[in-house]
Length: 280
Image (cartoon, rainbow, N blue to C red; front, side, top):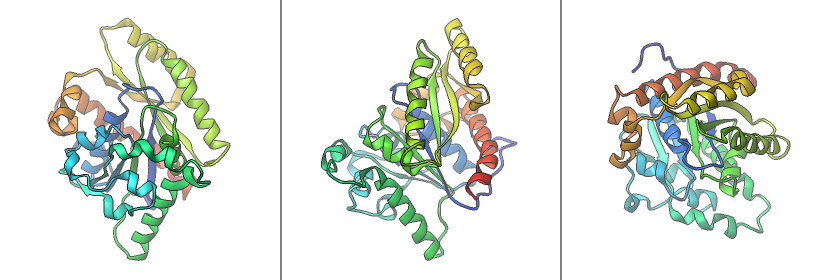
């Protein structure tokens, strides 16, 4: 555990969504390793995989054969979260895995009026059940989304209290960010007025590339303090870790990528203090 990171001491569970409509920006990697870092300091974390590709599930060592039930079953009402969640080999970190069944969710619920609220209802019911049975609940729920603004992503944004947006340090980064910010505003003006922008995470930074440095400068100039100070580097150990079914924090604790995600977790905890005042 990195010195200086302290628990958030949450009074109520927090629901964070990690989303970006663009693929390949480190979204799932961020969800996995942020969840692992929070669990390492004693938070009870549940990651909910909403991407049909199931990379978050694979990255936490959940093989496809063991996914008898998934987030799809939760969304369509066939199962409760508590019956689907699986423990991982990371202490204090559980996951609701994903399967390809999620591909049919949008079509199957096309005529349902509440379809954008399915995940919110499921999470609220789970949290209430834990309170009623006086069982320890989770302090953090982290929702990993597909690389698209579709019904699955909208369910996550409607259920969440705050959103983290990974942004790759590459050409046209600001254009992609603008699209994501407009989506956030649409959700805030509609089904979830309480959704807050937790922060923007700059990922895949290459110190040898002048473009990366320029992107960091441009994003900070426009977005200011909404950008986390921590920058996630382009690191081969981060890329290798999922193939071993491990977060990079367990695969190689000392690598630059692991240390960056620990720093990010520390920043998230610090920002949480201001967000707690809003939701208490």
